[in-house]
Length: 244
Ligand SMILES: NC(=O)c1ccc[n+]([C@@H]2O[C@H](COP(=O)([O-])OP(=O)(O)OC[C@H]3O[C@@H](n4cnc5c(N)ncnc54)[C@H](OP(=O)(O)O)[C@@H]3O)[C@@H](O)[C@H]2O)c1
Image 1 (cartoon, protein in one colour):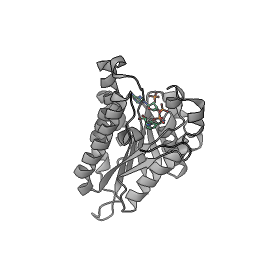
Image 2: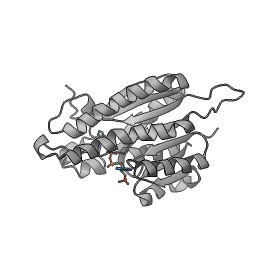
Image 3: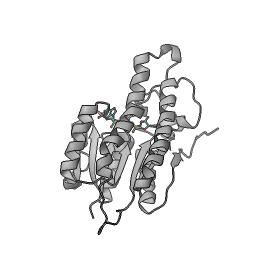
């Protein structure tokens, strides 16, 4: 049976590594991000199973158009990974209301819209003879910032707490339908995001790789599909990791 995943943030970092890992494991992947050129080069060997969808996930109309394309490609979706996001750390006095709002829209609201718009595809029964199909999985990429206090992260940390609340509430709302929602919260990962955010070379040397985080995301998905459930994983780098 064809397994279809929708991955946002698939042009870079954690989302890209997750899309590539799912494609390697035989999934069909609808990959969303704004940079279509990066999406098209995701997996040259798996073109038939890759649907690149350039879209801004904070734009409700663009998101709806992408979901319509997914529906006409494949009628049902078995997994969703929401990894589109950003980061900045700045004192409160240097953070504008517009920056704060942008962080919340991308980190939290876009995940809400994504799941709401994909629900009809997640609800498509895939089982034979009226039996429910395998359980479906939604994985929100959160952050250590939802568990540990860092200064200068009013916008980012509050949004990541929002992701945790969103995952908990969506799981309670959807579990009766066989859809489970979990959160993967990484510590520092070496990606475009951290390379442009002023982390030291030493910190980045010790950071996780995107593929290691992708492995945890796929583990969460497979656990759900096998009938289990892990609500959240905190995935930290081994060296230099702190958790108070
Ligand atoms: N890297 C870390 O250390 C770390 C640690 C903890 C949590 N996280 C979180 O993990 C998530 C992914 O981070 P990452 O490190 O993988 O970052 P990344 O390498 O910068 O990737 C971010 C992805 O989000 C996409 N994106 C950003 N804005 C978008 C928009 N408006 N519409 C559609 N796509 C958008 C980007 O694609 P386009 O630019 O092509 O649109 C890109 O594919 C973020 O929420 C981040 O805060 C990261």
